[in-house]
Image (cartoon, rainbow, N blue to C red):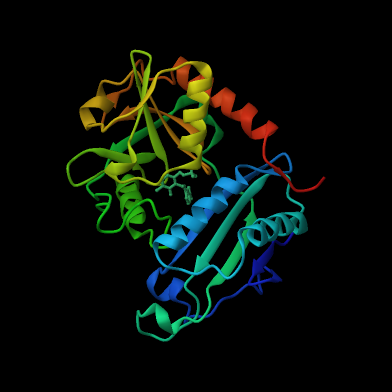
Length: 292
Ligand code: PXG
């Protein structure tokens, strides 16, 4: 089955879905994106992702040329046309076509692309066994340089980190900020458990405010687990009982080794399992219905 891709109100086959080389999304990474999941014929946390998309747009002064409701409808229609009950949605809003200078004023209208496809997750066995991660030398940008709160099309910082992970032969990476505090994974948020207390990175250290992160925080409250947002160091990771990453793509993946130190007993722990199982229930029982 060929994918059906939305570009600016029209639908194209994968082969015909093309945008201009003068689009500032390509020329400068000037734009924003979202990554969403479809489970069981429902788009998970659709409204939250669209809210974050509009927040990213506002922050970079990018005018999205449609209303919030039209954006919701465009997602639903694209998923419906693809007939995919389980999959992934990649939404891009670029600054649009302009001239070769960086000045965004040359771009008269933003470009909206919605891709619906399958997603390649980590191999299934890693969700059972957990992943080996390293902290990388590439720092997450300071919040006053390029705030990680904006999910921008400029992902070179994360790509550089991923290259380090690959060179190290690891399966995941943790990025620090310039003060040496833990920020997040290369495309995931991080949760650390010690003595029954769950800690995740606060927004001010420089992270993307993940939708999955927020879901986990809601679940922790429901389960009665104490959860704090606290700045973490590498030491906090080394001595943790359990660690896991969260993201729409990776979902919840246990981390069992950090920079050669085994986490807990080197196996995914009981609280991590509770969240993995609970998350599966949440994604399969909630979401924005596409096919009914
Ligand atoms: N931090 C960063 C830097 C991300 O890119 C997350 C956290 C998790 O956010 P959500 O809202 O998904 O819980 C992300 C998003 C990939 C891929 O190919 C992953 C993301 C984005 C784009 C691609 O694995 N994760």
